[in-house]
Length: 203
Image (cartoon, rainbow, N blue to C red):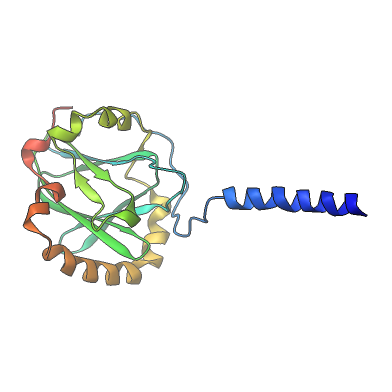
């Protein structure tokens, strides 16, 4: 009898270890990851924005939904951890937004045609604003070179359309609340959350 009890205890202990090692469920995944795409120069007359989302740790975060904000909110694509997303866009002034788990994050960008720009997405739950402008100072760091090797996906992911439509109301609410906070941000943080035209590089 004691041997049976010992075996049952061992089985329970092992099962507990596996349960603790299981990552939390990703509650807001939007679409299977598209096949990797080659990164080429932007088409003539357009600028290129690349969103970098390195995998930062053991805990897996859900996908972040990316948008372009103008008179209306235009979906770009979902971006999982461990990938970079390529988005070609007309030059000029733009505001981008990332949404995840009820929070919205913003970054402003002034883009020049023919240039490539990078936006770094930091771990969402640890930052007031998780979208950071990649400037020359950050590009000089060794970690940036590692991020460039992340598999790239295109912003044209039609399978994500249903997710965007189903969550539209929740994103509306998050955008309103977060935008008010964004407008009250400290001026000292302005540079971190702004891409200037000179931050672009030649592909």
